[in-house]
Image 1 (cartoon, protein in one colour):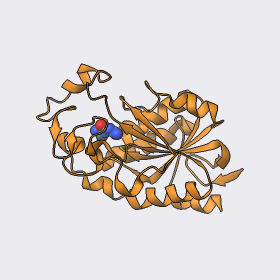
Image 2 (tube, rainbow, N blue to C red; image 1 turned 120 degrees about the horizontal axis):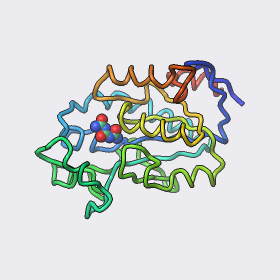
Image 3 (tube, rainbow, N blue to C red; image 1 turned 45 degrees about the vertical axis):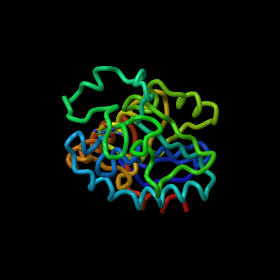
Amino acid sequence: MKTILAKPYDFPLDPKSCALVVIDMQRDFVESGGFGEALGNDVSILQEIVPTVEQLLALWREGSGLVIHTREVHLPDLSNCPPAKIRRGNLKTKIGDQGPMGRLLVAGEYGSEIIESLMPLEGEIVIDKPGKGAFYNTDLGKILLEKGITQLIIVGVTTEVCVQTTMREANDRGFDCLLIEDATASYFPDFKQSTIDMIVAQGGIVGWSTPFANLLQGIK
Ligand code: TIU
């Protein structure tokens, strides 16, 4: 067991029972011309975390840890996308519509793919999810159980949307979750900080949070 300095108190890391979950590092959120921009956001702020996520991925791969990538995507016929989700926001370009990187948030389209530098390696698990949380309507829970995973290190975008939703879903299912603060980003920096504050309040009611440097230090 390794001790990771974290909020609200030390995280007891057991690397062989811990999966790294990289959430939705897709062109649609991180690059211009995708869904994130269609929502009215400046996507450049998300790009700042890419080098840290790269380092974390390398660290986890080196240690032969389980890596799970998620993507928020829908089937081409949108049959797994609730009409309310498509309608939300009255967007000019909505889920399923054609954008500069292909149809927004549709599986198989260029924009739905994970960005080049964080591309899953052959054999790594990729969970396609129709919701904001990675457990809803996916096999993630079953896979983690089968692999004996009890802890999750969570990174990716966006902090208060898919990251927090996934962390809450995981927490309710009994997983101990550690958020890496400089490996997650929001279009709204205040929301990112509020999310961290919410997670660690009340004795870590949703989980733990720490910067990457503390994970590196503790894992040595
Ligand atoms: N992946 C994810 O967070 N999906 C979103 O829609 N995020 C927003 O912040 N909109």
